Length: 432
Image 1 (tube, rainbow, N blue to C red):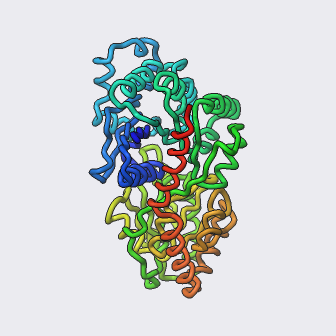
Image 2: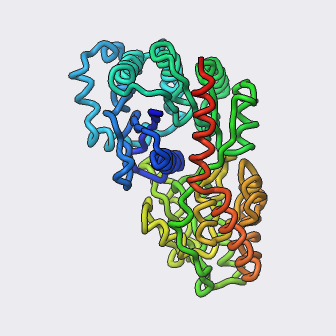
Image 3: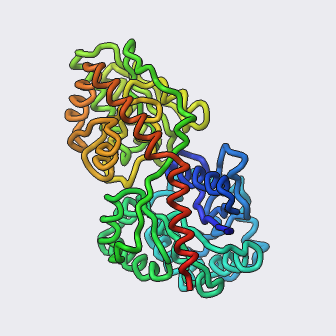
């Protein structure tokens, strides 16, 4: 089967969980004998893996999408002009600008993209569908997230093939809009979802949430947990001299960077564990820099900055080495998340996690038994939870081992690919 996966690029400015998932899934499906092509949208895909490079030119280049949204002139320009704006180096540079990735600044554009052939980027829809029909020639198309399904109607109309859509964290983007705009966007996705043959989401929590928000029958939505290559991770010794608290996500307010910083200050002031350090990794966008700078100033004012290390976006060996260096990991996300691959990555390294009691986190920790939960968005509660864990090395080791065993059994990329392909093949076999 030839599968084409439509994937939005991130420009590699910061850690992108969906990109990480898509890369692993493509490689695993290829390993099972399927021809899987990666088609980038908006921004370049920056993968360290030579086997997961894009298999097509960039479609819906971020600059062209923006220009077509802002001016009718660019909705009629010939391709040779549009092509100038799709130059990868230029797109990568523009992708680092905060306005390209801030939901609250892109509400009208999000709606236009969801309207597909009826939106301001209709020209881009035609270009993609032309390529799929005459060059890509897929048996099935998979959308990386529901914000892309505006183009589904034209693909279905012209290619007459099954379409699959993955659901993960769209609500965080959509809920950042005004209430009226958010409502309209959910309604538009719900209407456009009629062209999707099956949805695959990453947790039972997110399935229940999106079935309700999008008003789609739950039998059309399947749960497949994100998987990782657990064998690539090195087991941590859970260092205690010093203890090391880790963070592995985009460095921003939404992911709880400030909550963790406040918790660390509380821990240092309590002084029950004087020898403890904080390592923060994951990179940031330019729009996050003022916030991160304010966190650094707060840490300096509290006289704890010497025990804090800020690291860039990590991949490959530097990523596994980082996880191996930790005693515990916490990403105290302010919003309810659909999954959290960093949880399974930490557990694959035998590192226990401390996560807020919301979103998919309780579900994942109930399955893995690899960590503890605390009251969300409460720095004192997080500090208490981390402190109780660091003061109990037996519990740390037990949680670390339980998490590691669970990930190696239930959250592997092989199992994820097997379940994905089972759904895809069933949809394809029953497609009329």
